[in-house]
Amino acid sequence: MTALYDLFVNPMQYAFMQRALLASLLVGTICAVLSCYLLVKRWALLGDAISHSVLPGVAFAYMAGLPFFTGAVATGMLTALGISAVERHTRIKEDSAMGIMFTGAFALGFVLVSRIRSKSVDLFHILFGNVLGVFDADLILTAATGAVVLAVVFALYKELQLWTFDPVAAAAMGLPSGVLHYTLMLLLSMTIVASLQTVGIVLVVAMLVTPGAVAFLLTDRMSRMLGIAVAVGVVSALSGLFLSYHLNVASGATMVLVATVVFACAMLLSPREGIVWSAIRRRRVVYLTALEDFLKQAYVLDRQGEATIAAVAERLGTGLRQARSALRRLAREGLADPSDGVVRLTDAGRARAQELIRSHRLWERYLVDAGGLSWAEVHAEAERLEHLGTRELAARLDEVLGRPEHDPHGARIPRAGQDPELRAEPLAARRIGDTVEVAEVEDEDPDVLRRLDEKGMRPGARVHVLHRRQDGTLRVRVDGREEEIDPALSDVVLTRPAGGTSRNL
Image (cartoon, rainbow, N blue to C red; front, side, top):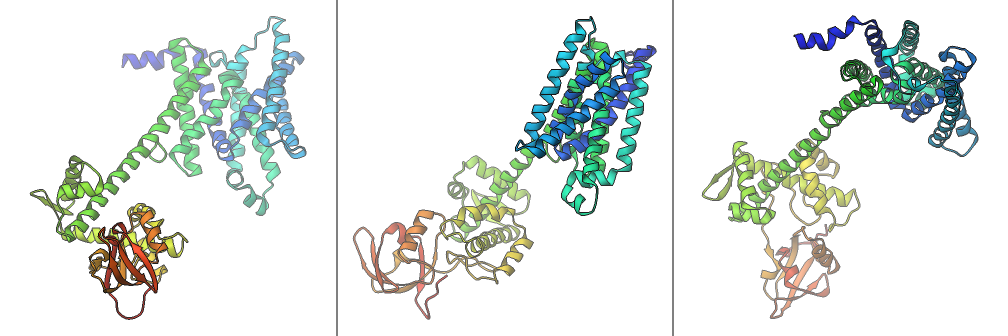
């Protein structure tokens, strides 16, 4: 309790800290409100340009004996007009125009500052701020400027929101885009001037960008974004104030550093955009995909009577440790029943595996029929899509495709409770003189599929076995054309006795 008193209450006995607290609160609020519009409008660089361009105005005002506010707003608006003029009347793009104008204005400001310095006047605090040196007049100016900025934003909230998100729609609805454009520039110039004493014209850019960027990572609604940005701006300004007091360091820079730390935390931990949560979600997707692949391969091997853990691991190309871990997870979810090194799927596990096979084959059909891909290109893409699709999406695909019976490789597209596998024999097992029909071909190797396509070995093709060489190569007649089929091809072509009309899928 004593530590908190020393940290926050004790400094408040000084009048300069009381004024600094109010100034920080005001600057943190108005900068945060405008930062949301700058971020959505992609005007962060414009804020940088105007903040630097007020320096010659401040110097002119000092030399002429005028209030800083007058000179700063004047040069800020002139710079904004100059950027628009360069962009509209030349081939120079907006970002280049900003760079040219603000560096020119900033250089002019430095020249004038050097002249003033020769008269023993230091404007260092205008560049980098000194909230601990705020006077009552500065505080009144900041409060008045903040009140005007917030009042205008509140009055034009809907118009500014529509214009920043979609200026074309705003113009189509009759909103005065030019007026809104220069109104936001005027508010930006006034905010920068109000922040001069607190964080300076160099560091004010961070306060005009960072709070809005933090809010943008946390929400996608403008009203919430404004609230979060104000909270971040105020917390950053006040935390920076007390830290700079106790550490005896520059106040404006400390406020900016606190805001940067908050942004880094949001970038890492934001539930929507955070790097950490995104990595966790990606890892979870990879893990669930591996589980479903295990389930599908276990189902296929179970149909062949070979569903051991070792066989599933070999088929997936993983180690036994990973396979056992996946099996334990499937058992916890009631999809499998491990015993004696054999994978036995429950009814729920078999149903889920059939859904994956159905989804895979529907996606292959869709990619060929609607996507225009060849049958050799679709397997890998369908392997990815089968894990993303829900049961409702599969039903929608089935309806769009006209409820197809087979995928492009001839495999049956199973319906609820239907066996997805066909009863067929490899072409390699057929005898000389047999006439068969290609029922299905394995779909995993694109090169094999391309070779089969060149030889006309597609589902529905009629094949007559003419001769078998000692190395297993078959000479066959395919739809009236003689071809040689080596064992690498004849092993992956599943056939059934020919009957009826040829079916080309």
